[in-house]
Length: 257
Image (cartoon, rainbow, N blue to C red):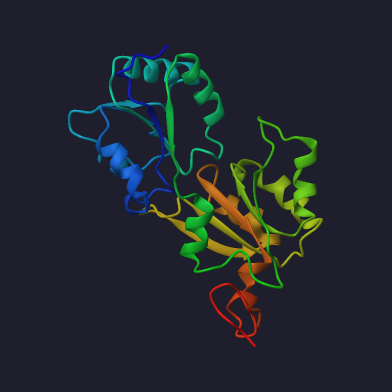
């Protein structure tokens, strides 16, 4: 059982990198932290600097999950306000389920604070919509298999067959195989946004045809902190428009013809 004085452990999303893209709730949690256990290999250190001067800071880049949990549990059971700070959004590729299970086993409550994801920051940086009427209405978030592997029902070939706006995380090391799989379904000139550390000071962001996806990645020596967005929507909306804002469309708040 947890001690009554133990506050919930906050698992906080730091967003894509820029401190001003933190949510207000995330910033408040960091500013109240007494122990900050943060993903220093992926989170902008300026965000960790928002914690109070007296806050204990523990970097996790060299720790195993078990060591991270041990550090969190020890401090939380001592009654300290603990923030486990993740890059992006904790619900995406953040081992969130594993951490919550282990913390629950220790009798600790958890509060999850969402963060802006890299695909959203990338679309914003390009001033692009990923769901253009008549072009594409579905966004898929996924990754190349790699060491983690993928369920057969979620193979890249199956996802690419949708021709949706496909956002691929953790895939730069496998970009040649990714490009080959995508070309079986998307036209070779389909726009691909390649974003490296989007919203950081050293951001690099380009849109290239799908056929140049792998070559461009290798030229830039992109291995990590890289996101790909493959989408026909990146070519522009053209004459497409949303019916929601059409004068002919009736809805609860507006009459129409």
